[in-house]
Length: 138
Image 1: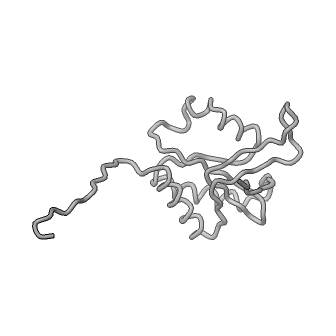
Image 2: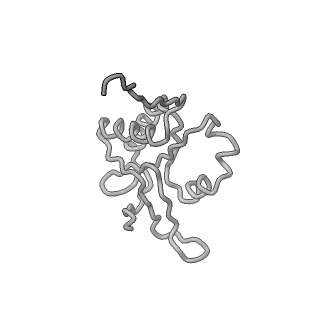
Image 3: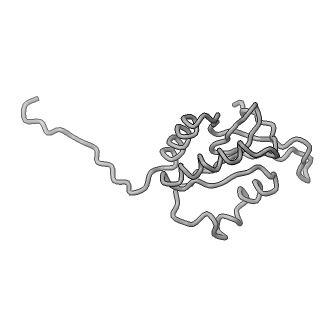
């Protein structure tokens, strides 16, 4: 069509989305030789909650080594420091602490390198806790 104006969608976003951070973190861990798994559930064998159910959590990204979870990373798109009381008083945070699974937050693309370094450090430790990892079926 002659004279028709081209239409372009403009996207204005100052911060990357959680999905973008998660995808970049996944790629960085894979490139570093780790086995990252997205949206994974971990159940801690032997420990149960008051209701008699196993303690479990769903992590945005879990790092698996020899079939067992060695770390979990939660991706958040926020400017709030993850060391603040606002993060440390959440059910999610308290569940990770109760479970004992090493975890951290990744809140920006600039933190990905530090997360990979942290996972590398964890993978070299001899006494890392082992967790039963199972994919949730629909």
